[in-house]
Image (spheres, rainbow, N blue to C red):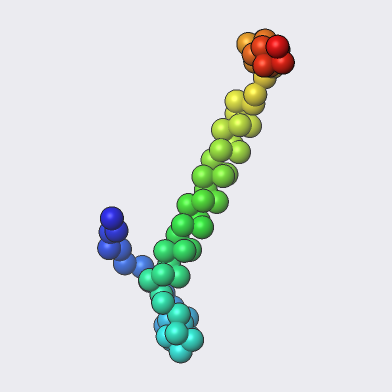
Length: 68
């Protein structure tokens, strides 16, 4: 499912894209997808900084079970 949206693009950039045969909608989708991906990575990194992993005895015991 897709949704329509509008954005502003400098005229010179739009002209160059048309001259080069670039599909502006597809390029915009890729750009937004890339920005979302980068933001998710950054959010995850910041969450980890706020709540870093700590040693957990449960996992140590669980690892020991796997070697039996």
